[in-house]
Image (cartoon, rainbow, N blue to C red; front, side, top):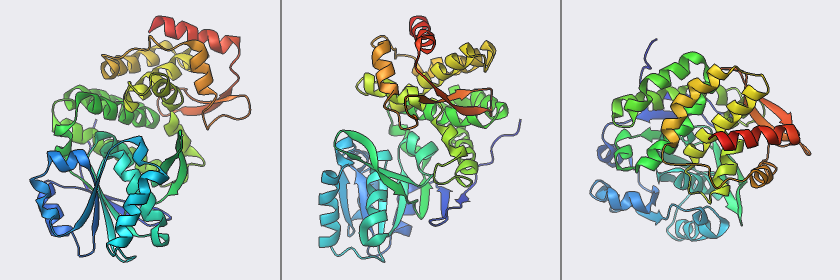
Length: 356
């Protein structure tokens, strides 16, 4: 099996094509690429951890934001937009985002709407952002208690991935990123799943292996989003693990990180697929050998069947009274199936919750 070639690439988009680049020195790159008029939106934690590297921001306007869901709201955006306008930010200037997914969502939403669209550049600092969300064009903010209800598609003009950012992440954040990236490899092919399986344990401690997984994850995602940028067709298979995963997140009050919840979600989807004779148990067990290492230290003991069903009923992929679940017919054969939550389906979930 050939290893991934780590190289920069371009993502084709109907909004605008954008380049994705792997960089070796964050400080030098920032210093050499900032332009007059740039306005930086940066995660507070990153500003504190990398304060020496970020001395290059002196002389530029920047605002530090908290990485929480409240920031991703109209109320959270108003002070940022006020600052931009009051400090002379113009349509020909750029927004520079330095942070994880929340910083990305805040910046991309403002960039897509302010002056009917301005250029923005992204330095992703979380593993979730580096291996997943930095490409794909999606932008969203929350509305009151409802997550990601307002948004659109507006990719950055450039993405710069600096792997050393991952060295400051907590183990839970690494696990979350690894869990999220895993679903791309299963969606793609058995060959890609085996590639992930070859490197994933070493990737927890070795940045060379982690870079291989990040790069391959992005290349898999690139194939799909260039064919279905607006999530109308084949891209929907990327919801594999997410219907159950989102339910687990909400039912545990987000004590289980997103990518870890998705790894549980993939196993539930595989178990349901096995019980419905879409896959044999070997495939489920082969994937389970990987997911147990991602969710180690977490459990689903507080998940009750009725609450799980109620949470699944709120999923946006549902049609009428049927659940729009993403199930598994084998590696590279992930598909959507509408399932009515009848007694048979509930018994499958009961069996799963007792076994895990």
